Amino acid sequence: MSYWLDLTLFKMGFWLTWALIPILVEIIPSVISSVRIMISNRHPKKMVMPAKMPMISVLVPVHNSEDTLFACIQSIHDSTYPTKLIQVILADNNSTDNSFQVFAHAQNTFADMNLRLIHTAAGKAQALNAALYGAIGTYIINIDSDGILEKNALMNMVLRFENDYEVSALTGSILPNRLMLKKNGSLLRYNEYFEYAQAFLSGRVMESHKNQLFTMSGAFSAFRKEAVMKSFLYDINTIGEDTDMTFQIRQRMKRKVGLCANAFFYIEPIKDLSELYLQRQRWQRGEVEVIQEYANNLEMNEFFKNFMVRRLLIDHTFLFPRMIWLCASVVLLFFRYSPIMMGMSYFIIYLLYIFVEILNYICVIQLLEDFPNDQTFYKKQWWVTLTLPFYNFICAGIRLIGVINSMTTTAGWNSIPFKEEWNKVTTIVKNDFRMKEKKTTNHDEISIPHLQNQVLRQRQSRYALGKRRRQTT
Image (cartoon, rainbow, N blue to C red; front, side):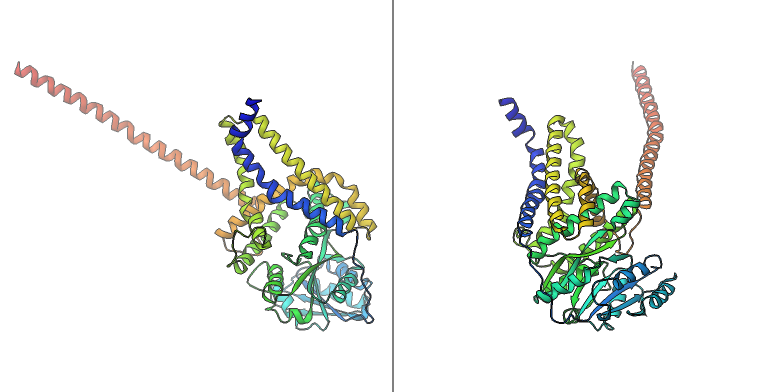
């Protein structure tokens, strides 16, 4: 007994301390949030239909969207919200493809729709700002041109506004298109699907209840017109314009930002790991920029009081310990830490993450009750809960790289692709080794003649000393 106590408390004490970080910071808060969501889901708030439905404006920024634009417009037209009460503005920011022809075709096909196109400067923020001034609706809804709306999404979004006058802005729930997953699903895509489902239908539900939603989705968000027109509009100097708008409304204007969990917008699944690498770095850059602007007066000891402090520490500071665990696992073996104990600690943490994913899985199933097709598809992919911790660990590594790049390079909409960045890293490492080998070789070339000359001088000194002694004798 004393042996195991000594091994655990003394030799493994350092390692167990590191292992406690994910348990205290991520796992325990996630369990508490999941339980709260499951309890609140038992008593959903019923929406009351207003006597008169308001006019809404749907803004769609367009940039080289010929392949997806028509389906996006069709999803607006086929919505259960009355077509005569929908104004659609396509904001084309320097498209070089046939997006205009797609618009013209949609205008002829959906003649009963109030559909127009405007040309704007390059950039999503500029496109949305220009479209805002042409919007006539009581509510303004932004959607991306590469996705489609669920048929009840617009109706559910408006009903949420009409039943809660304290809410000034809402974000919808984003899900990868399940039909595309059925046709061409990969392990990466299924993990992304689960990530989105749990992020919006579990994590953001709790954030919304506390008015602590960190960011509205740029793919699908909505505003009261009077609120968004009192803001500074979308910031054109950041790649996180959606997060900046969220903070403008909540922090500067002191108004409520929420989630409409039953308003779905379906996006294209991620193509490959390279696209994931670029996307998550872009998100991380935008988050860093917004935090830098709004977090100047934060007190770091307010972890349990201020959600911005928690988000800052979890999404940035605690990224480094995660990467340290990976390297420390190898290093600690050289200090004769028990590989069995280390493996057990990793396995226990993995099981705890699985437990959290199962709780989130149950929460999502509850929130999908009104969407049987989505619920059935989600249920069948239960096995993804076993791989999601590894996917999240990869995303954490990409975010860490994004933090480092945001501090060392100029932010832009597109980061350096993974393959190109990896080639640069390997080139630098190879050059460093070559320089080291060259210095070693030069040192050897210099040191050998130096030693030869030193030996010769010593021999000459001994010969001269012996000669003087013979002359004296």
